[in-house]
Image (tube, rainbow over all chains, first blue to last red; front, side, top):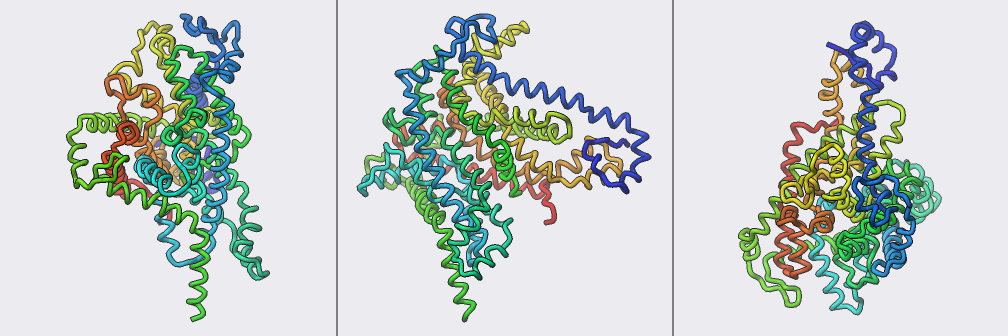
Length: 313
Length: 295
């Protein structure tokens, strides 16, 4: 029978302290040893070293010469440093970095605009308008989140192919299949925004309604400005998803001048067959860097957004 | 009468707001799913119209060795990556839920790898797993151990990929942390008064209280593992000797390289069925171990 002097108990109220104090005093030493902060630090430090080592290895390799890459034992801080590797990647004839970045940014921008617009409108409908069938539709929407992407991939491809054959608009071999869906909302983001709209009191919109404001006016002038932090989360996640997406561009993009960064990096790798690791690592760092910078600029928004993901219990 | 008129108005208004999603659902989800269900019973090489063949695709699939290999591989991977990922992420979250100094830094470092674009992390790990000059074998060599061939060896390829997946648990850790911070302090105090020691408090208070979050992460992990594609596609192309040939790769090859759209549709539906059965099973067991607060 021991008690544990856990950090959480420091917030405990007086009465419970009183009752437990005797037992606590008796076993305090043993208890404190169990939640040893030193041990926690040690464990976390070890884990962090393991988690960060790949990054160090990546950056270190990206600054090496070919000889240094193949040296045994390896050096951690290369001498001489080769920052030119990065320039070599950017100007590499086999990987048009600026063009791939431009392509990725075009798709990402369209997806972010589409997702933020459509998801917020739909989320508002689900959160603030009481209409028949709302519960059923909402449940239906949540259940679509469970459908594995591969199940939809095959028929969606066929759908875009069919649309290209039967309408004057071409879809395959263009960016369209990669962003058009964004303008129809995405279940996860609608859910996230709906949870946010639910926290805004109805009185606000009621007052505006009495003043003769239309529903769309309430949404655009009252709700959207209030939802700015949640919209930032949605924009951030959408941008990341596009930046990281590999399967979508692999299936839909046909010409190399349309490639996104992710797809470009893969072709760069397969053409090199893993010989010039310093260049491959430099390219990886270049693809990864914007995401890491974005994360550090919006760390709080990020963490809160992810935390909300698991909140539906 | 007035209320029904108002109801109708609200319905029109509500549907108008929800319509972007609803139209998208009809066009990009429901129609494709319906079509693919139909095509799964057809011979459909994409260049010709689909030809109804009944259960032929499914019969053929069950006799394909590649199907069984890819399914077995995916399950093998899931059996390693899923429990390991669940344990590591929950363990890290419990460690991070203490009040010690420098938590923010630890949390950031643990989260960072899950930001790495999948293509970049595949490249990085190909290099780490490199048998001759890779990070792992260099470190092992220093310890006097002759390291394995990692992803180049039939026996270690799949465990290597599962090991690599642990690097990206940060996302799940954050979700656990959010759940842990919602556990009311009073419960710990009550348990303490009753004299529960640390391990028992974790087992009887913490775990049940965050069981809905564990359940959520479990479902997401089941769906996620059946979608693994980019990592083996880039790192091993399914090899060596089909050791890392995942289900999704089998599907991708049939759909977009061989253009067997009917066959691939059947594969997609089998995948959906497996995921649904596993999820339903998880839901069924959840009544025993998932505790919802105030419900």
